[in-house]
Amino acid sequence: MIVVCPACQARFQYDDSRFGAARTKRFKCPKCSHVFEVVNPGLSLAPMDETLSRPLTGPMPEDEPTPPALVPAARTTAKRDRASMLEAAGLQVPGMPPGLKFSLAFLTGPQASSVQVLERPQTVIGREEGDVITRDPETSRRHAILEIHRDGTVWISDQQSTNGTLVNSERITEPVQLRSHQEFTCGNSTFMLLVRNPDEFPLH
Image 1 (cartoon, rainbow, N blue to C red):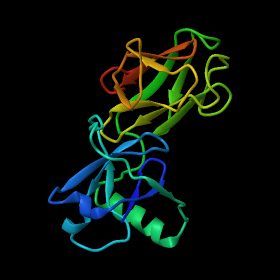
Image 2 (image 1 turned 135 degrees about the vertical axis):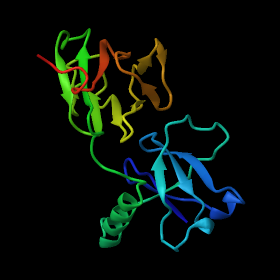
Image 3 (image 1 turned 90 degrees about the vertical axis):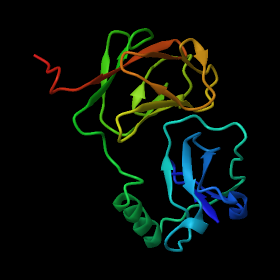
Image 4 (image 1 turned 60 degrees about the vertical axis):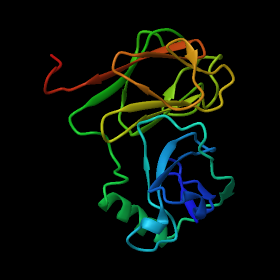
């Protein structure tokens, strides 16, 4: 069977016999480090060429194997149809959570004392590339990714940066959930995540 990462659309070969009687398996994408769950195709109601997968809010089990072989992804009509099916099933819903506003405050670094609004479900933080530009020489060109899930949770993952991404002063090795007003550091730049419900706390 072929497993598809819902975050970066990377495709991987996996022996579906390893599911056994389990209804689902958890995987961590070796390309983007996204953690997601795959439904046992033997329990699916209808056959399909790729399994249904959805993002998780829990940590990746240490004993769960990662699919080994990367398969080049083709942009086909079937792929677009599958994305529509996942969306209709509520397993892959694009867009930002309704009713919430997200932003990043630069606390230290070259961009200190500035705030950037997050308007996309996935935000790349980097020295010179991405959605949030740090201009920080200690930050890698493509340092970390923030993912905003439909349920309003925010996750950060390091992109194999040179100096690492720190949350609670510890270098992360897998996606970590961030809460509002929580700080994290990329290189010499420290950020604070701000999540606001404008109905409850309107700006004046």
